[in-house]
Image 1: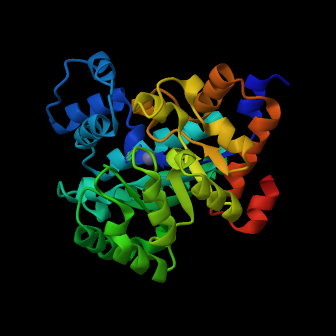
Image 2: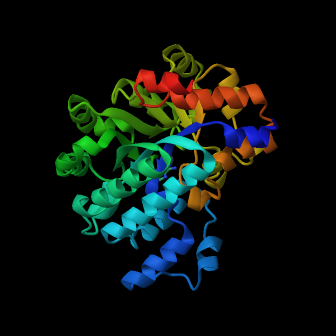
Length: 326
Ligand code: ADE
Ligand code: ZN
């Protein structure tokens, strides 16, 4: 089988996907018109044309603005269902999906609006296609730790739907050490923990995520190459990195895909995985990201198989379910 066909045919997991980052321009346009929200764009093509970023913050500004069209339960259902339909198309059998409650609660849209919408779509996708989903509730790191603690408390009625907590948004200037208490509280409640670290931030932020937040996975982590002892630690612990190649190019973490370090990390035996991050903003879903590694980094079949296996190893699935796919 050629590599393109194999990328499609292999059952995969996706572990780093922001549901708000899967809001396609056409859906944004339709929901804006449904709710009478005025957008600073004249057409769907205009929205697409605006997706040129120079760094993480320039993207986040548009991402939060776009999320403002999500207002009622059905909007969140449509958003989740559209992403899970793409999962089905890409042969993604399990997804661990981040959502940003504070992006919605700060606009008066509560857990009782978005969680039932997500749940209905997750159940429909499970029934139609057998896809399994875990939700990761991510705290916005540009806000205070108190705001994150309030968010953890507000989520109480929905804890059974949530597998893990995460940390995202503007990394520089908002180190993991700012969130020690809320992560300790989340761990005590039995949640798994992940954090974005080493996307734009220095290796020190990855150390902090490991030593202070006690995370189970690092989201991105590509700047670990700047610190040899950190690389060794990640390798020794088999600590997964959920790497997002097309995101890193769109946000100028690397100049070009041919400069991306994912395959060299893989060849150094780090547990790296491939993910889309915010597919509608970065121009590609999961299989597009795998194909980009083939086109620009000459990924071979054994590297592909290893990356896909890592995606199951790094997941929060129970061991017997992982073993079913491995
Ligand atoms: N929120 C959505 N996508 C993100 C990313 N790539 N980094 C940090 N926060 C995010
Ligand atoms: Zn992310």
